[in-house]
Image (cartoon, rainbow, N blue to C red; front, side):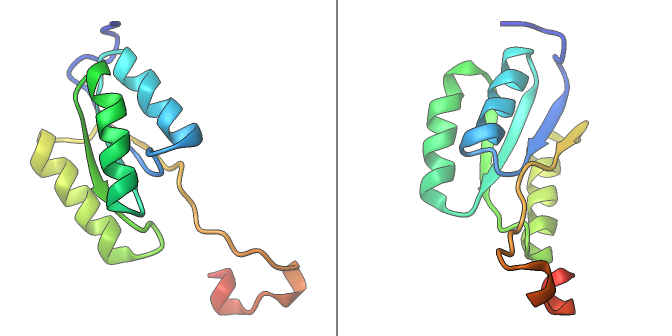
Length: 108
């Protein structure tokens, strides 16, 4: 295990699968402690179980489209590790429609 990021804490949104899980895996491999989030408890629990052998990882359910969820995620990271050094905004909210069909509320 690498130690380039020892004593560093990273938060990876959408860290339960795909690119986010790969980023979390790489950070853990460099010695960082990592907080991941996903939209379901099942996906978070499974990702923490999968990533746990690689290092210090904690997970939380969070819908990044909801301000209250994001605020709680940051509170959780700070309470768990006492700080946050890196934020990787991997998760997003998708609206799948032609641009001309999006109303201003959907755009925001």
